[in-house]
Image (cartoon, rainbow, N blue to C red):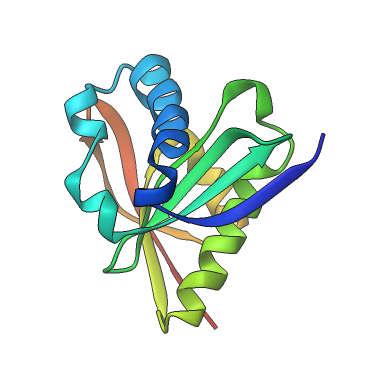
Length: 140
C-alpha cells in the first residue's frame, strides 16, 4: 500500500476531505451533519492522506492555530497515518509562523496526542455529545 500526504485546500479537495470526515464523524460517531460541515473550511489548510489514491485520512489547521477534524477511516488505522498527518500539519503550521497549536481531543484519543507532545488542560467537556479535552503544544 502506497500512502501519500498532500497539503490540500477545500476548493480542490472538498469531495475527498468530506468523504473521510462524513464516514468517520457522521456515520461512525453519529455527529449531526450540520455540525460537521463548516463554511469556514474554505479558509483552512488541510492535510489529505491517500492510500493507493483512495482518500483515507484528513486533518485541518484553522487560521487561529487550532488543529481539528483529524480522522482516519477505520480500516486504515494502525498504519501511522494519523501520526504522520499530525507531523505534517505541525510542519505547515511552523512554516506559517505559528508558535503553538491547540486542539480539542476526544477523550479516548488523548494518549495519541500526548505521544506527539500535546498537553491536556481544563475539564472534560461535551462537543457534539462526545467527551473532549483541550490540548496544546508549543512548536520549537
